Image (cartoon, rainbow, N blue to C red; front, side, top):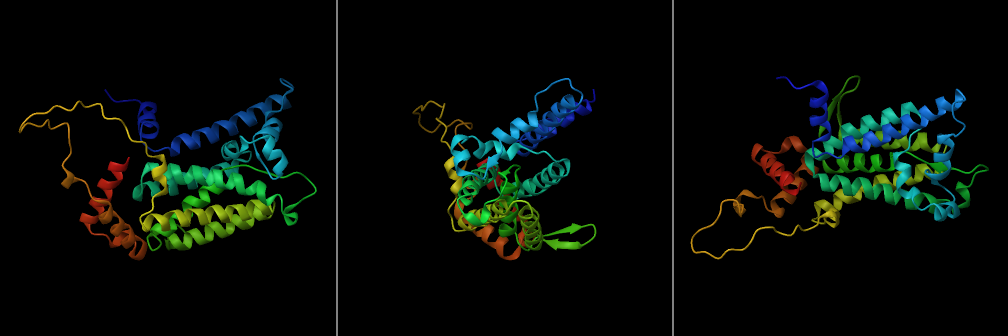
Length: 290
């Protein structure tokens, strides 16, 4: 029997190991709830404005005083979208560039970089509120996942700068040039309404670059997210007999030095320069980490 389209979608989207569909789903859900409540307000069905409440309590305030009173906004702001265009733009970029990231690195590294960029941006933005040059007559706040998205784009451009993609109107474009255009235009657009937000966006983009540079030098900050699982296997002493399920051949696992050399080669010459054997090693290492 053929499985339904809905079941196939659920399997391919939510039963995969990728966290990207879950992040996008929360962002879309919040957007729908905001505008559903606004419709009910316009129809005089309810008097409560969810958008106003979210803007006051869940977006990231520029004022350090308000931020101290609402510390949870260091996380909640990244899931909030009010405009349809911004939601579509960020979700499409996250889906595309995020999955590209997962082609080269692990889910753990993606989650670390994404969440740390959210937190770094959430801390820096209110700090910039202390600088008089960023003060405005009206209270400012920031929302959306732009800070995290900038870090992911910068990370990919640093990891595989010479790898190319084909764009409809522009032909082949390297990830490095694409990232430069994306980060520059995003900073300009954000800066038109929120200068502190633009500077924070540039800082979190630099964080993505720094993360990959450190990774290429053998420093994987995402190991902070790695928890050792306690083995459920009982140790049984026996001579000459081993269960095939109790160990993996060490020769099947690529060593870290070999993986680091491949990552260095990618950063210099691009992913396409790898041999089929090197691609297989990278694939095995990625699956083992996950």
